Image: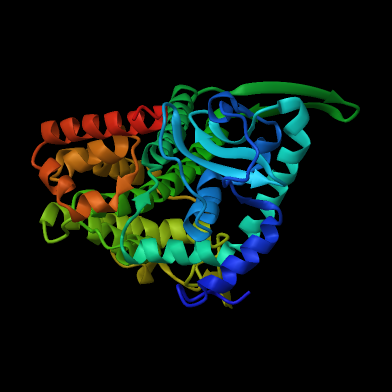
Length: 394
């Protein structure tokens, strides 16, 4: 189906959605319902098969004009409907969306048909949802999901594995395991040095740490750009999310500051020269794995003199001075918590709240960025508001 241009094509979509709903209609004066229907209606099993609550509400209320009875205790919204003359109600309650009926034993089969009809109509209404989403982005009425803490947790977990493996390698550096094996040809003695395998394991883990670090910061910088720098336009945020790591860095942090610029220069070396090499199947982007034939044997296409001053360049095999890189990652992480974005770091790393573009647009984030105490108070207020909404305590 072609993408709709609202509201010009809305009437066409309304007719299609109503056709998909079949006998599901808004309740009216002719709908059969006991006087205590709303207070006694109970959740049906069939209602558990409904699509997400927002899709159902946008379909029935926003697109088709079904009446919403409004909020009640532990109820966010309530849409009374008619199915073959019988009353049902679609409600979003504290424990989820459902189809509610007066007599569960008698009405369950009809509730199942209601659920099926709504599922069908939701699929028909897909262009309407796409239009709603694009309108929300253009008007910047958006929340940006915050996965910063989870991504940082992955980075810290891998970092701890690296630390432990590295410590074990050092502790067992002089360990030698001697084994003798007798065969018909005599006795053979083997010497195993655990240190070498542990060092290799540590190097592999360091690569995973670097991958996790850049995954975390790619996500983090977009959130910092909103909270700390006031980016509030939905399209700009969407474009930033799709740009390269270095663009996200510059949007979140002030690279005109020399300390910040030094971190940027070093980290971009790591990303381009090391991470990109691994990410591209160990071929790199500039022929790092190719060797040409010569009178002295195979020679790397990119020779040492071409590597410049990048101290993080790869050396022949899949190895590098991971201690320097890991130290840089740790140091930069500590720097973020000491920099001018410290209040924003608290919000995105500690609050577990989404980033809200309307709060950037109305200056709420800017006011909270005055100090860490101000941000903590702002986060406490938002938590209260989110908890009230989640509990449906109106």
